[in-house]
Image (cartoon, one colour):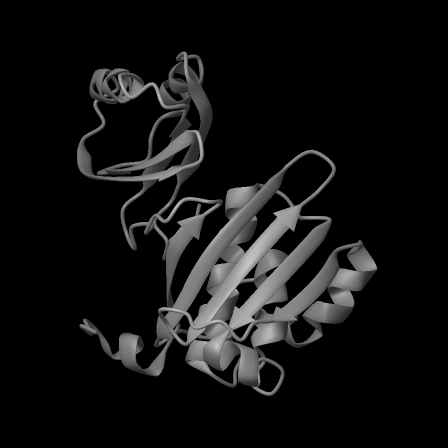
Length: 223
């Protein structure tokens, strides 16, 4: 890993004990909460590798739930996150997986309420940093800094050209494009130089063959 500052090594301002198991986990939970757009009624958290072995002792459980409660890494309520989740009606289930994962600190968060469902897969990669590697059934890596747009379409591939045209009309520069296919849907992540405007997002949603449009802040700066 490349470090750019001392904070990449010692981690962010946080509620401990571990930048990898606590701060990174809180950021994954917070990202999932922001992407879901509200507090989930049910959160099913599947833990892999080191997370699965030490999640209680290192505070990974309370950190993940704290993030889902919209708590940042330095929020003093994180140690009480499980109790707070019960109080506000969030049902939390932890599942320990013995499957091998690409990174030892991996979690899959399946969130749902009465109206929708979202799955986010994340890795805590050290120093309080995290990496999002999957959204729903798509294997997509969310940019760490730059904002992006998740576009889910049917298999009518020509629509992606229309997406690019609307982004250009909105003066949005595309830095990178990543595509993943699952079942009869295609998930495409457009990395942008600046966050897509509300007007552009609404125009994209009206395109034919579009199933989902989600505006995502950089993984390290969820908005």
